[in-house]
Image (cartoon, rainbow, N blue to C red; front, side):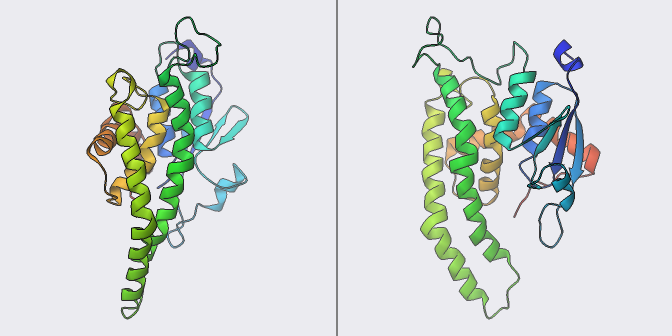
Length: 252
């Protein structure tokens, strides 16, 4: 444990099953700081978060962390805050910002840092928008429906998937294929040779897309499998199993 971690204010993660909060467990494991997890279960019928989360943050969503007396919500902000304050000097979770000799100059940022900043926003903006909208046809397919209506609801779901969801996923996954192929230092991560906070954020939407069998391309699925199999991700799963008794990320 670093001196920073030993003297840091208490960190508590409010973790909700089947949510984006698992990424924060992974990040905390990578940072090597002491932290506490409080777990919450979704309503079995509605799949909504429990009302107890609203006592932590008014929106009642997860992830939410408390650091000392400060409450922080939104995955991207949580990752930025934790990395900024708790990543040690040798950490690669935030790539080096400046090219040598170009410190503070417009355009002097490294390619790795600009990718890091981009994916911190892309993940929760562009990509998660597609994931969220994709839940509509996925939910229609899985909803309990009288047998005589199933052909109609199935056709509606298929048309939504064919007209919007599948083409949108194809566009995003093709983009990721190109980004992985052109990653600094040859990758294998989006920002280069080292895992960053942006990669940890990207894990959730890609795992959801993969579980829904949304036609992945070779590099994007290999990248997804690498993230799932990383030592930090595995430790995060073990942590939840030890606390909650199980870990089931399947949202569908």
